[in-house]
Length: 365
Ligand code: GLY
Image (cartoon, rainbow, N blue to C red; front, side, top):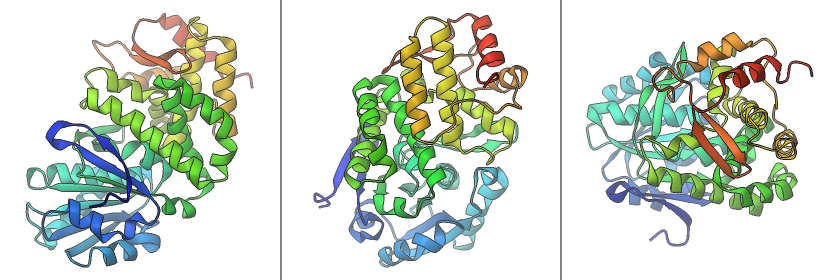
């Protein structure tokens, strides 16, 4: 069953699950029937995605008793208050512990729905159906769920794995260009962490990806999911190696929080953050000038920012980075690069180099 669909497996023992990748998958009732064990399903989506895909999904869920909750779109709505709307619906529908929560949307919907699944009656079944490129290659895979606090991004949450991830690449047809580029930032990230060959492939195929060429897209999504699944399989709850997946995120989360959630898209902030990590790595002598230029060039070609917002100063960054989840014993730990495709998590760098990068990088441009 389902053997006609291309899939990648996330290996987590008895909580292993498949990531299905293909066209038209949101309408495939057989996927839902395979991974939804009991009769009740709550679809959590947002007001941008609902008009496009909710009917199609509900039709494919016809066999189940289903309900839906439509949240307001946007990172600024990833709050405890909005999250509570999910529980209001679950309670109103009198859904029980055997129910399934299905996330239909981008990273915000997936994170909030997953966190609700982790908490409702101490844990119910969860399925991810990501509809943005960023959520397809990153946030829907690996079980990170949660909401933001006004003072810090993703500060409240849980690790909670889905039963499966359904990536319907047709949903990218309606994705606006800015959101699409934001997803490319996370794809580039995988090339830089531990897959230099993929980084070279991206250099050779960025135009195809920008044209949304199906074959290139499936390849890039598949490879990103494989890269991520292999890291998550080794370190599900980020005790070590998984922190590598946060390349660009310490600077990026500071940008998102500092600018006000929703002002910069997550992928845009990560793109600038990757360039900042590259610049610090260069200043430390770990990365060559030519390598940093290649990172910046690829990120530029993906129509993404390469420098931080001008109004954010060093003190803003240091204050926001001080509450990053990777901080240990009061020391900021960063993901830096020793070469393209070789990232490390470290607090072993000269703080002065960080300060001068924050003061200088992107300021004179
Ligand atoms: N997005 C980083 C992670 O899932 O660990």
